[in-house]
Amino acid sequence: MAEFDIEGVVRALHEARADWRATHRRSREPGGRELPSRTALAAILEQLQGALFPMRLGPPELRHDGEDFYVGYTLETALQALLEQARLEVSHALRHDETVTHADVQGRAESAVRAFAAQLPQIRRLLDSDVQAAFQGDPAARSVDEVLLCYPGVLALIHHRLAHALYGLGLPLLARIVAEQSHAATGIDIHPGAQIGAAFFIDHGTGVVIGETAIIGERVRLYQAVTLGAKRFPTDENGALRKGLPRHPVVEDDVVIYAGATILGRVTIGRGAVIGGNVWVIDDVPPGASVTQATLRNGAAA
Image (cartoon, rainbow, N blue to C red; front, side, top):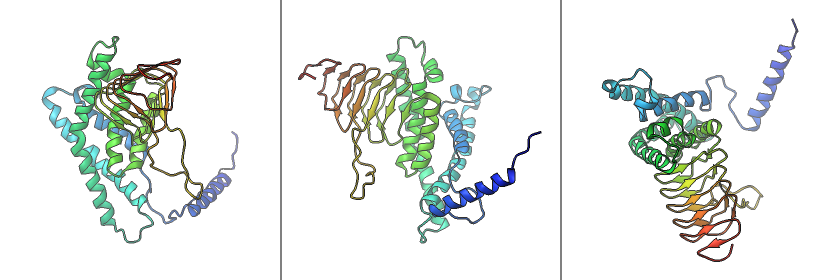
C-alpha cells in the first residue's frame, strides 16, 4: 500500500486556510460554518419545487387527498431550513458591524424568509405562464406536463423565479447559489438580479446568458446561445469595477431572439421586434423591426 504524507498536507492546508482568513478578516474562533451551504440549498430547492407543483414535482406516492398536507409540511420544513441559511448570510454580511446583535441578525433573516414565503403563490402563477408559453411556442410539446417535467428552460425559470425573490429580499448570496445550481444543471446562466416578465420561454436553452441588470418584458422568447450581456465595465477612480450600474439590455414585450444572437449594453429591443440568429446588436432596435445579419427591416440599414 502506498504511503502519503497526510500529516504534512493537513498542516500545510491549515496554514493556507489561516493565511486566507487573516487576509479576509475571517474569525478563527471555533464554531459552526460561517457561510450558507450549497448542499442544504439544493435540498431546500427540491422541497420548494415539490411544494409549488406537488402532483408533478412532488413525491411519486402523493395522492390528491393528501396534497395540502404535503405542501404545508414541506413548506414548513423548507422554510425553517432556508431561515438558517438566511441567518448565515446575514450574519456573514454584517460580521464587521459591532453594533449588530444576534437578535438583529435573526430578525432580518426571519423578515426576509417570511416575505419570500408570501411571494410563493405569485411565483407559482408566473411559472404557470412560463409553462404555458413553452407549450404554445414549441410544436414538439405534447402537453404542459411534458414541458414542466422535461424542459431545461422551465427548470431554469423555476430556479430563477425563486432566486430573484431572494435577491430582492437582500439575500444575494443565497440567490446566486440557487442560480448557479440551475446553470450547472441546464447550461442556462441567468443572474438572479435579472427582471423577467410573465410567459417567458427559453427554447432548447443551452448557452443562454442573461445579465444582472437585464429587463425582459412579457411573452418574450429566446433560443439557445443567446447572450444579453454588458458591452463595457466602467471603473471608479481607483480602477475597481463599479457594481450595480445598468449595463444589460432592456427587451420589451413580445420580442423573439433567435439562436446565437448577442445583444450587448443598455440598449432597448422594442416591442414585437425579431432578432435573427447569430447577429451582434449594440444599438437600440425599434418596435416591430426585424434584424438579420445583413439588414434592419422597417428601419434604417444595420
